Length: 227
Image 1: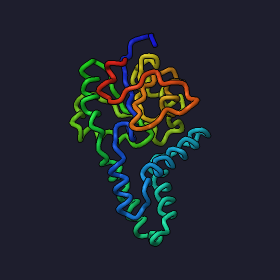
Image 2: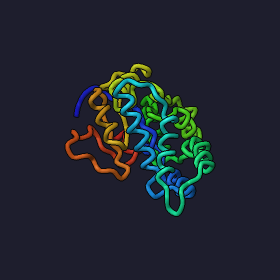
Image 3: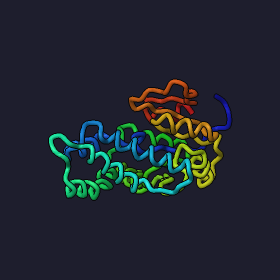
């Protein structure tokens, strides 16, 4: 693929930068079944996508609370979770999500992008506070990294307006902007909006029938080499 040089990189956050493993452990410790963290995130995204499709502004946090209640309601073995236990989980959930660690390649990968003169920003369907906290823990807050979120707007990713709006806010042209994500639907949305899609699998398979990603990397440290 040829074209204008990439000047700006947008980074998805949930699972692309962060490791859901500790959230899975947190949920298991509180009586939820195996696979709850992935099921929780999938439910939040599903309901966010639906709201975006019909133009309904809604926040990630509100949907996250509903998804957690649904997971708790499905527990019947060895016994249903009582209401105080569920309320406690709901109170603790934002902190648990906000404390998720980064994958090992994230900090060196972002530093390499900055060293190469690329503009860097997160772009998440979740809270920008999660991205800001992650950058703080990685010692990257003084590097000029923007933290954009579509949380609470009517156009969650993969709606084209979410990517184009980010480009507009950053002053970058879509064709000179790369979106890095582990979710194929995110790559598909970015490419349909005219951005360059860079897929980092994080253990996933590319869906049959999807157009191929513009680029594929196995670690964020490889991004500069493929742009």
